[in-house]
Image (cartoon, rainbow, N blue to C red; front, side, top):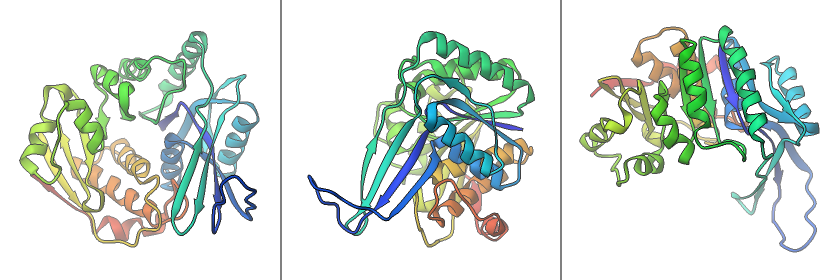
Amino acid sequence: MILTVTMNPSIDISYQLDHLVIDDVNRVSQVDKVAGGKGLNVSKVINLLNCDVLATGITGGYFGQFIENQLKQLELAYKFYHIDQETRSCIAILHDGGKQTEVLEGGPVLSEKEGQAFLDHFQGLLKDANLVTMSGSLPKGLGSDYYAKMVDLIHASGKKALLDTSGASLVDALSAKPDLIKPNESELQQLLGQKIDLDDEEALKKALSSEVFDGIEWIVVSLGAKGAFAKHNDQFFEAKIPKIKVVSPVGSGDSTLAGMAVAMDSGLAPEEVLKYGMTTGMLNTMQAKTGWIDPELFTEYHDQVQVVEK
């Protein structure tokens, strides 16, 4: 079983308008409300691949119940830790021919006691997990070293920790040596304190060989439509993907993590781990729904991904 963690989930609400009028009433007929958060996107894709997954994290109030009801409809198993505060909602207004205006709630503020209670809850779930994915931001009130504490618990249980976060929580987590991180260009530059040319293969190799990343099994850097560049232990790989019709890129990084998690859970070779991740990332961009793929297309696009050692 793969355990997925979403510490700060949300209800993602999207409104579609022909034109957004400021300081006036805007009436909308097309509304979508879905269980959101990077970790839940990972959970959905793993579930669509027909692999055992258990979603955890922190939920509360009516909105938290809404999220759990949605997962129940998807037949996706979950065991969240419940708090008295309300889970956040995030609004995206799609308007004026492709523009997107977002209103994002910060979410609940957790106490130190609640933070420790979740760690206890989380530790109890680890015994049945083969590996763990952790995605997204941390709720307010938790220290930036919180993911590092979770990685330590995961490793103490003999399991693998796959982490997709940013900022101080990523910096602090590196000391705990998660088994996989997937920084984007700006996050990579922040971690190294220098500009990195993603088109320069030797510069990328040097960057990923920095002592900052010592002890981290997988470092995966997205190259967008070009695919990805990755370091696995002492090996470097480039993954190339075919040209596809992109409907929405939102959630493709989460879907990539889901594919890699499934491949790692199955004990596949590094090249296949990358191919799985690239395939699920591509399939998500072909969907309007975030964190969603058509499993029937998996083999067709998997066979078009090229992974070469560099």
